[in-house]
Length: 97
Image (cartoon, rainbow, N blue to C red):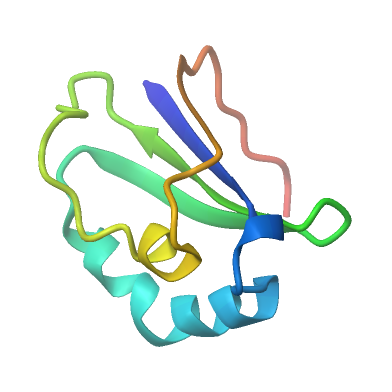
């Protein structure tokens, strides 16, 4: 399994965590439900550092070069992710609820 992590530093953008959260609720989630090989995507934010991002978990055989839904965050923020990485996932565990 692979993980893709994208982080935006919002200090150069007119967007805020609140505006991005509203856009996500309105239009950002649904297109990702049909992506082949994507196991899980979650969006993250950090008010302390004024950052917005996403983490995606992919099947090992997923084609990470395949077309994806439009990157709505980049469109709204006005520039590509400040930091982006692709890593191997070594283990996953779910805690007791």
